[in-house]
Length: 414
Image: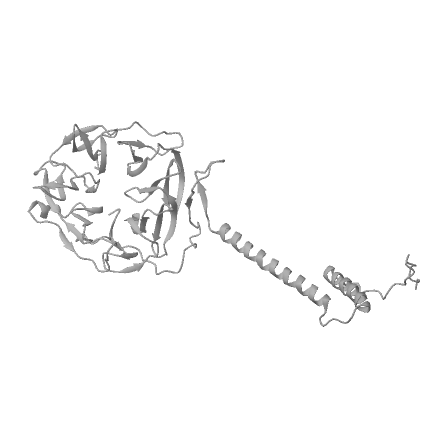
């Protein structure tokens, strides 16, 4: 055994330490040796200073570990949320529109009761409703949605479920999908405006000065395209494969969603569009001199025929029947405000009083049944043949409707 090497201070080395010594063990031993030397020259203290120092170090290490785990949890939640910002540009602060969804179909917000496949629409014109966050089917089944206020709703094609457009909030609008047999899932959030194609297969929205359009396939948004939008321009409906855009300074234009296509020319005299007939002509309210009139428009938004009696109301409420024969719209007949039924084929008198004033969307469940909600929150249902016979829409008071709660009728494919 070799003697211990001679140290400059003529002190001999102490006993060798074990080989399996960690960095923390070395630090702890050094601190104890230092304090033990000082204790030889100082009076005995009531506490162990080395223990105090080491305790503080351990507590600090624990706090740092907990903070690191918390930050890691936040990062993991954001990474797995499935969020993608659309339309952002470098150097420009934005309020992002977010497309949400899990392609595996497992990202839901909670274990809410889920709705089964929607049955075929009843032959008597019964409609689904959304009342205070509850989906009420035409058969009377009720499902808590838990998605916040809903302003518009429609069925998905092939009885695949429902699409729900949220009311405007400080964060924008949200588009929810309620797939058959599953819980609600957010497809889109933070948009300024959202509009859906009548068949539920496409959606268009505005965000951050741009117009977007995408397909809806398997609870996902696909093939998204966008284009710069005029200030305040909002998508209001689909016209075939084009999007009708409302301009704040008056008028409308059409945009065909494509990466290389710009919005078309502005039709300044088109004030509202109620729907599209099977032959492609649009039913609209237009400006004619100093009054507003009903008109049929060509595919370029040019008026083809105009009818100024009766004059439709300026609130934009109304819808065209699936066969293109009937228009249900607000207006005045006999000095009273109310819903009017207009025969677009012209085979009968131009318009008939049909019921109370329309508030919100009109749902045509087929060519012979329409439903809407009136000012009092009651459900109004009508049949054109009975209106022609002088019978007004029948109104039904709905349970669960309180002050400030407006039921929403569900439209969509037949």
